[in-house]
Amino acid sequence: MSSILIINIGKLVQVREQTPSPLRSAQMDVLPVMDNAFLFVEKGKISAFGPMSELPQDFARSTNEVIDAAGRMVLPAFCDCHTHLVYAGSREIEFIDKIRGLSYQEIAARGGGILNSARLLHETSEEELFRQAMVRVEEVMHFGTGAIEIKSGYGLTTEDEIKMLRVVRRIAEESPLTVKATFMGAHAFPERFRDNHEGYVSEIINEMIPAVAAEGLAEYIDVFCEEGFFSKEQSDRILAAGRKFGLKASVHANQMSCSGGVEVGVKYDAASVSHLEYAGDAQFEVLEKSETIANLLPGATFFLDMEYPDARRMLQYDIPVALATNYNPGSCPCGDMKFMMALACMKMKMTPEEVINASTLNSAFAMGLGATHGSITIGKAASLIITKPIPSLEFIPYAFSTPLVENLILDGKIVI
Image (cartoon, rainbow, N blue to C red; front, side, top):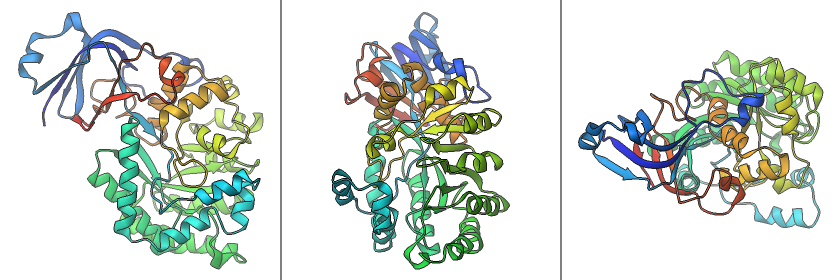
């Protein structure tokens, strides 16, 4: 594998020793930066970095490729720890319904929403599903994403959930991204179980989870714990069944109500609980005593025109906070992590330092990659953004539609 030397880096961002746990509270407002630096990549990993004045002369002689950053910044590639990237078609007609005043719940009750995506996915071949997903993969890489979590959940049958997860596995094999797969059969109740919710819960537990585990298609299991979807008690049973097969928990929690999702997620040592628009002090106290990360998805909050999670209160409670896109066809058709950072600054009053930490190191921890991704650390994967010329770190969330990425290096390979 070739080596890369990046020289004349204006700011090398997120420079850390190995960090054993996600950042909390005041730690999140600290972003270590090295000015006028070099970085050496060897065998796909960060091998060395430091001030340009300390650049060993033999690095340039022995390197396959030298990149002159010419004063631009280098930072870790973004880790998008919550997406539904694999889906068929689109749902812009529901966008019109929303403009006309229908709520997310009302659209779902009419057979739209997740059930609409499930119908489209059932009619789409695995090959076509992969083709559509790879278009989105290229898109998110150009936004600077280097590691991504992808959930199933638009299948709602054993066969179609398996189809989705096989596509996720193929993305991991054939794209440069680092990919984590999550089984989410508990995303909605399919039409055939409209009047028999317990029947579908039983199908998830007794058929889907064993089938997913038999093929080793997922590392995580997620459940939409919400009014009108899966109750706290049903979510508990599904997560317990997943644990028996070695699937780690994560939960869609408290998006539209105080659903109990936070509590059930913490009970099962969830890597993260996501959304949290309807979370307050009671839930924050539970999270503070756990290792579970609060994963905020401001793109969905924006698209659904809801009240934003209380990120500042979470940080006061010493809760680790991550950011992700929730890229999906119904509530956030957007895979741009930089836009999520801008929303977090503008709508949740997080600082630029906090949102960069939340989108790199903490989001890496939220998908089990904290030891290998999310910071400029010796031995970590060389998954790096070389920015276009920008004046400051604050410019990243400030100029929310301005392209950021000049080059993207993933596992030591230049992919953009």
